[in-house]
Length: 273
Image (cartoon, rainbow, N blue to C red; front, side):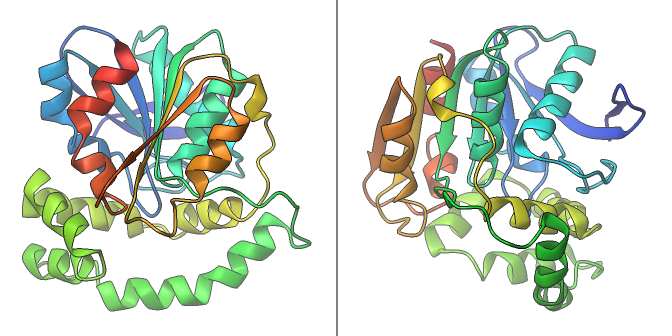
């Protein structure tokens, strides 16, 4: 399980796959999710000739817990890219990861050559009264109950995957099971849930205004949304209005995860063309 030390001594766990050489794409996973999500794009990345990197955010898997924002997490991911010798790269975010990818492009324009955002909700524009830590404590009981129902400690991989995918839209579940082995999916679920801090911090930040300026994003940007992903869909036009060079692509019939899982080759090709 590859991991590296960040400049302040924290540990960051990551996955690097795809082609051995070629342009790099830095992928920001969803919530709760981990670096394993990028592995569903491994064969597509090899086909397109792209190196694909995904870093576990703070509190996921073996990545150290730490107070964070979208901007600081983007900085951590770029520090991992630096340690691997990756220079300019494209940033790609799935769902909650879209905010982190956007922060990366807005804050580090000299590093990010293009931006892709997939099925990301629009953030609230007003700051909540509670702090991030207070929100995490508020979300904790419900999330703990969800994890208990999933029972990630169950050694039966197939049963764990069945419980996890039963809560997804059928199209998402079908494509996810087709994209990864049962053992890999079970490992992904366990890694995402081994420490609750990652999810709780992601969830708290999701319901806060972003602290960076979307209008400062200079690189070409594509927003991919599924027409049947009704919860995330409003985020597409919202982002398209605010990111100067954004192109909104809406795919008929696609649900949430399916918007990326069914389009990995097209997404990667667009990011590095």
